[in-house]
Image 1 (tube, one colour):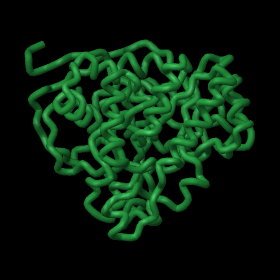
Image 2 (spheres, rainbow, N blue to C red):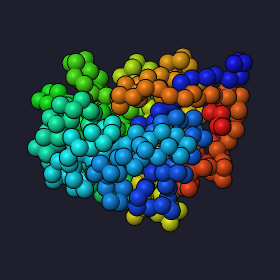
Image 3 (cartoon, rainbow, N blue to C red):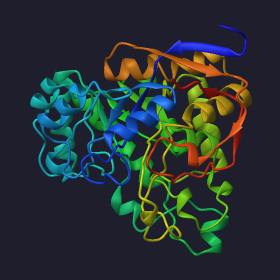
Image 4 (cartoon, rainbow, N blue to C red):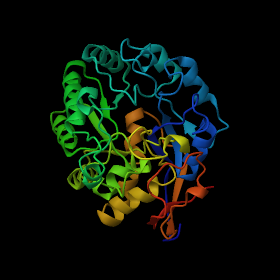
Length: 359
């Protein structure tokens, strides 16, 4: 390899939504896998918030066995039946079918007794529980964190406690159950502190940093534009700094995109009444390289571990394939070139130096 190119084991993204079945106009497994491969990913973990929900072994096996796709899929499965939060799914059958994690992503398992029962069973199986941490009663109608745009357009605000209190409850359940808790798409400095303290205590608690929460803050939102709407929302500059520091010091051993495609009709307008989420598979490598290597001074090998060893350890898989990075690609984000069916993201026109080389 020349100085222009770096080669790594194939990258893994443990948090993607392919909308299959349910919303094929937003994404399918085939288009999602193509987007993943174009973004430098050899393996992805799909979320089960499909329609119907991914709470059965057939849904798991169908994804694993499809070898015609551009990348490998290692599915996660629902914590509760139908993602309804009332009854624990058949975790044992889902694990036997090949589920690598359990999550009701998109929904918080509010009933602590249900969550505790699920965590006991997941711990026996040796499979992590991945939690979308937000207490609905504290979230209320909130669509963004407090910032200039929220005040200008009188938009309802999500307090950081909606995330931190969810994490606080689940860490207490880890002490009881011994289950590995993985907190998804962290947006608050308070959550960083809770996870760091739990790890110092020796608890099996981990978290993921998304490219958008690393690059952007609520103060970067240019206006009432749903392409900047995500769940959890962008945090403050202080939150962003805390997440970057957690990646550098190893508190967060992995990145993940939370690739969340939506049809254009679901993202037209402002923050009220539109869908949460942005796509990220095809921009994640470029964004995280800029933030963590170029801006924060992280060693490239250590940065790459957040896309390789960290996620592989979480879901218990071997590294496969390779990812090649062109350090001099230096191009702007062009949604017209995406393999994904969807275009909902805030990066259009932003220029990044290093990009993965797609086959």
